[in-house]
Picture 1 (cartoon, rainbow, N blue to C red):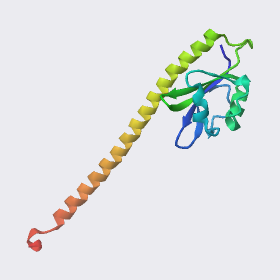
Picture 2: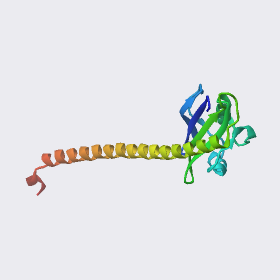
Picture 3: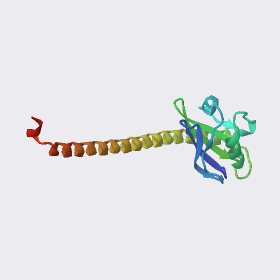
Picture 4: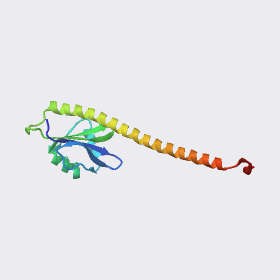
Length: 160
């Protein structure tokens, strides 16, 4: 199969891509995604993109990274209508072209990867909500301690 490749995660809130895993990439830091990445890659949501066909919307740092990987195939990872990331696969070891069977296998793997990424995202959200709930619990405990301290200082006879 391929000697190089990468899985890029797409972060909607900051419109950036980050490298989840790679073989052959030197830079691992997050980078800005091409304009309208989710919209333009949506045309390929059930397929793949052959990078030799010079997609004009693949620009900037994403183009640099795919060139560094000697990327041949890019598979958008969509869950329903939401772009989760991109799977980039480099050329084969012997420089041969990918067969239709290999591309089909890659699309099947990408489908499973999409489900795993979606589950990963859900787990991250649950962890974040858990942290928020723990903070709220600490705030409530502090407020309770304050109310106990205030009520112990007050004398009922003085209030009357």
